[in-house]
Image 1: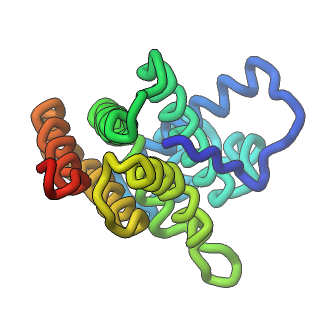
Image 2: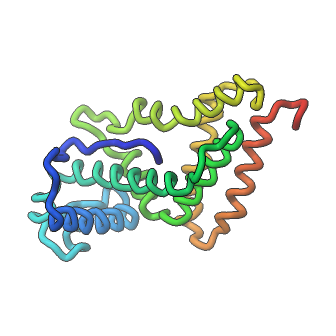
Length: 213
């Protein structure tokens, strides 16, 4: 959740307190609509009805549906970054510690913000540009996997991790984390702590040199 994507229609001018509050209100309702009805069902009319406001008021704050959906991604990633920052009282001393921190932080955020993260997944998987290409494509993937690959490469350089393809392992980590979103959405009573402990143990085993495992 550390990426910081920016919406294309976002103005450089600082919004007033009232404007910021209204934008935040619209985003909350937009997240609920995307979470409940999916990307295809998240029309501006439905979001306006859910929020109890006019469609024109949404259009005043956002340059269309795409801009609003990009703002959802930005908002959730910003909050996720703040959540992770608050958890890290000090930087982990080892690559293994950094990996554990990454897993625990991301899974904790998903566990407590499953609807928001689920809405982001809907947008990322479906939002396309005028040419029909996914807006969050390979560049998004590179940014998503970059931090993990750095952790794995540092661990291999220090001898803490065994030899493996850092990108493959980063993809595996992200697939588990992203899959947890759907697990939590489908089973809200899932034991986040127990799930996290198993995932941490799984990747500890997967990265530890064979002679030490």
